[in-house]
Amino acid sequence: MMIINFVMDRAENQGMLNTPLPAIDEPEGDYVPIRQSYIVDAHVHLFPNNLFTPIRQWFEIHGWPIRYQLSSEDIIQFLNSHGIDHIVALHYAHKPGIAWKLNSYMAEISRIHPQVSGMATVYPGEQDAVAILEQAFNDGLAGVKLHNHVQCFDINSPAMDEIYDICGRTRKPLIMHVGREPKSPAYRCDPYELCQADMVERVLRDYPQLKVCVPHLGADEFDAYQRMLERYDNLWLDTTMMLADYLPMDYSPRLGDMRTDRIMYGTDFPNLPYAWDREIKKLVDQDLPQSDLTKILGSNAVEFYQIDRRK
Image (cartoon, rainbow, N blue to C red; front, side, top):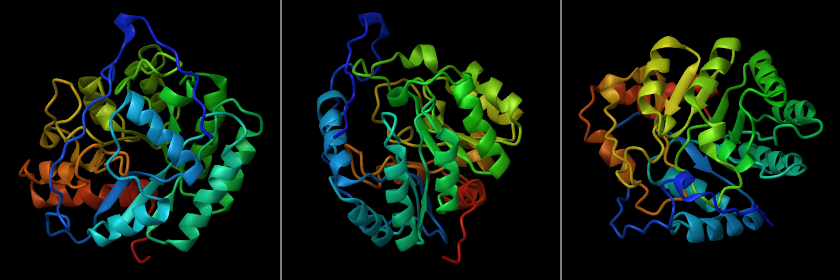
């Protein structure tokens, strides 16, 4: 059972998820709204059912109603049948001691479904963190996912250095939710203290061989992350939920103004309050050149996660 120590921050520290946001009852398409040879959703969550249930309960109380309450197998089938060719599957350990089992679960899914690139996880600072990741990589997992808002780690701590080191040495990508938003007062730590763009820049500078993806276009420090994209070739961003015009923020991303070779399409499926294709429709509506769409919708993720398109 997933347990998070809920605390209420001071009012001035409350983020955009002060109260649950509404569901959007909108029609969904049967297939992706674009002719594209290879589409990767680079931000999909897969968990065992015994963790999916409390995660959904948390979102219902503190985030938004989840529209797609599906099992991992159903998630894969749903996305593939709707035109998504490949899935990058993410999870995270919310406490020490559970990463072994979570990674074993993800490795088995990736073995059964070659159209899934499963990420490993670890709880930063836990005993045997390096051994946990070494085993996960040996089992075929393609990188590491961490979520600062849930795991509450110091980006620049020695505990993180050992994770950066092993990912850099093994050329395994690291996807870290280290943007400050979307922040909830239900988290047990304040992301505005732990997640700052300059702290991430220190990692990019100190570990040039480490490939890092920051989800949600780095919300809410968008300008800082856009500048860092120009400065660091080892930084990528994904679009997750930032194109959907759903979260209460004053930001309209123009992907054509960014390094389109460093942006990946992602959704947060199945943890969505709106239709699965809402974000890709808005991406298509940006009227980007076909070459940019090809990069954002597929080839950038193929490069970052070393996806074998033959599978």
